[in-house]
Image 1 (tube, one colour):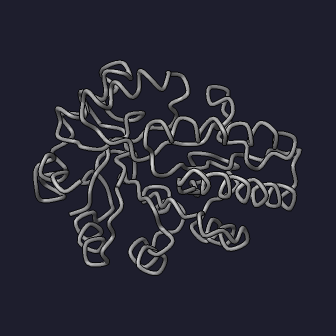
Image 2: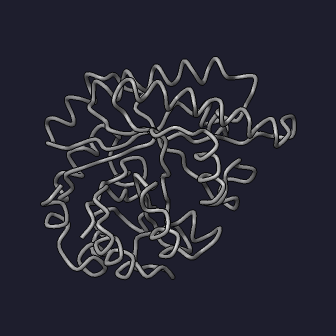
Length: 269
């Protein structure tokens, strides 16, 4: 069975962020991920991870003004300097917190940036980030996102991201494959995962419609989990979904869909 990581941006919102580490550990998780560490000091995040005996497996590069609707800046030619500074900041956090990989959200170009310029900027920025992260021993990931939840996002399909990865030409750039986003955009989940597994370094999940727990929608998660096992996928699967009720009340999917208890699911983590 895959190793699951609780996404603390989405899960355990019943308590303040810094209390979610203990809540995740109490629920049986051995690993966590979240969008951004930057509002908090390295020291307080390290303390929460150590107290809860959790491994932090992923966070994102700085992505601009999230509250104002920005979803990354890697596609914006007038903010290359800010992007590069953000890479340095992300490496500082990841190195201190022993995070093995960082994800890049490339952003929304907007009407003032044409598609060719946005693409060239993304490639240049990812090439820079992949090189700098490699020096630090950290993998770089890039994630396509669906255009329904994030209109105008520069990379919408798995092929979009894979084409960019090929153009960047780095052995330190991989695909973050979000099952929910790709179900909305293209389907063919199993075939895409199997074909591109060597380039997939991290997977995230949520069901569709609603972005809720596995088992609440149309995606056949038991089949996908069995497929990942059969393919030998040894990375984490991030639980980046919106609980329909409380997080704890919704964790029954681990037993009913994954076929075991939450704690057992992480025993090998």
